[in-house]
Image (cartoon, rainbow, N blue to C red; front, side):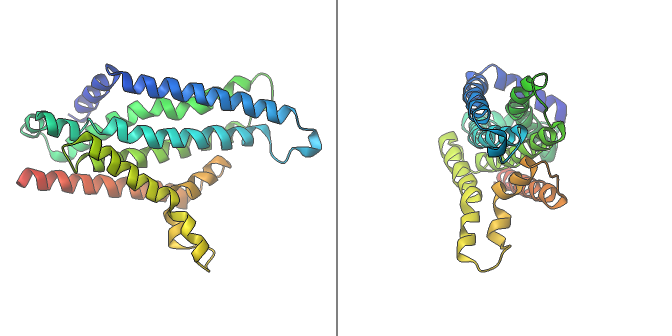
Length: 245
């Protein structure tokens, strides 16, 4: 049943222009950044280069792709719950002999299928250089994993926001607000005298940074998995409460 729900979400998503527009705009922007990095890197002498070309690419391409994924996830998630609340189609699905957890997981898997091509775009651009220069495949793989895990978290937050209201526009604003909080909360470290504070740990940027450097750390993996599971659990509770109303 999870596969059926996920495939339904993917099919309904692909017939709308939104995923294609996000993918096309993302590729155009990433291609421009790709060419800009190559131009800047080739214009430096060997003694002026403080990082490898692979690292310059991962920092710029994957960093910007994370911002695109952060914007795309709420837009794709808003129709999966909030849009169905508004149209009344979720009530039909809820009345089917299927557990609420299966519905939620199916929609989340469908959302991740739609977001995954965006997560692969930076690696596809970098691999164009494979025959022309030395590329650190391990660092590119780690950066791709980090971006995908970040997209998992963004998708879970988007689904949670979508479960809170029957107005898709309001759901998007709530999701953007939550994502903005997790983006800037690390800046509160400037007010802390401790080198490692709770605010810094809560910022997704700080954890993605290590993936972009090629380091896959257990703590960073746990961060993304923890918050993804947390927001999915909140979404499940919200849907369960709605069923009882």
